[in-house]
Image 1 (cartoon, rainbow, N blue to C red):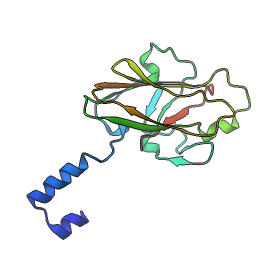
Image 2 (image 1 turned 180 degrees about the vertical axis):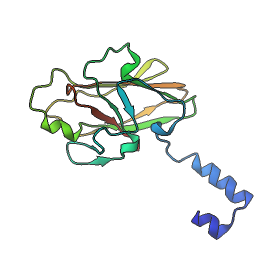
Image 3 (image 1 turned 90 degrees about the vertical axis):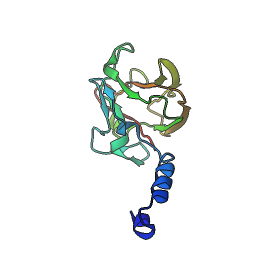
Length: 168
């Protein structure tokens, strides 16, 4: 808006603005046509803040979470589907252990699972998280040509939710 005020709204300016906007990141949670399973939350941190065990706070509007610790991989309940329509080339994100899990006083029965599929093909599987895991894991995926992106998540902290994905 400041640039428009200074340079005026010319056709050339508008054309350049539209061109450079194609380089701006797009959050998965802002895409239209999202289909979300009943155990998933998209763009909402269950505790109001999305913070990892090291205290790093993430944008709650971009977090994808699950509340079900024991999901059926074939059930759509623990998946979120995003329609990319082959319009994007790269997906970046961070997988992290939520701060709330520090208060878990029991052993985890299994490691949380986070997987990303492009048109039904596994593109990414997050590393195992344990009670000794503290460091977040960043990833970058090539999603060129992908029409439908599926994020599957299964919890490891019983009835606690997992705050897993942040799209920078």
